[in-house]
Structures are given as C-alpha cells and as structure tokens.
Length: 117
Image 1: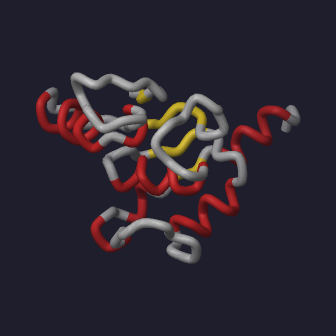
Image 2: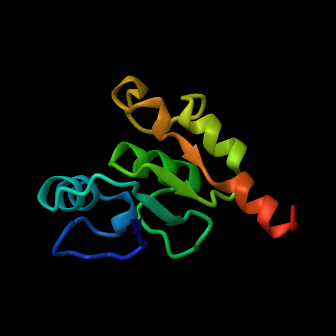
C-alpha cells in the first residue's frame, strides 16, 4: 500500500504533517485499526509536495520510524542510506527498534528503470 503526501487533519492534526510521515496514519490507522500486514511504501520522496520534514533524508527517517517499510525514489539514495545508518540522523531514532529488513530504498531500481537497464 502506498501512502501519499496528503495532509489529512482528521488522521493527524499536526500542521504540515503528510500522511507519508504520520505515525497516527501509518501505524495507528493502517496497521492497528485496519490490521494491514502488507508492505507500506511512501510516495516519491523527491516530490516537492512532501511537507513535514526539513530534507528528503529526514522525510525518509520519519517515514521508516513511523511505520513505512519502503522509501520510494529518494533524491539521493546514498545520502538516504547514510542518514538511515545514523551518520546524519537529525532526529531521535533507535535503529534497534526497527527491523533491518525494512530499510529498503528504491532509488537505484528507479535509476536502472530510467536508463533502460
């Protein structure tokens, strides 16, 4: 299931908090209330419509820490991986609380598709 960069105040009342980055939406509604057990993917992190983070890397960290499983098209996949590996982590986050198999970044696959490889 893909979560979009929408602001839905009924699900998360914080100002400028996209559903992509929202624990009440991803974990609360999708996983707990609806019992969704499948893969949750973000909308493209390179999109300008993403609100609620200071950088695409912070958006990826927020998305993963709030329940997303896959990050779609981060602008700089290596910078995203570095941030997720705590080299540039701008928020309080314990990677031991998140299974390693959830750190999936779609940037390289997107580049290969774009280049016809």
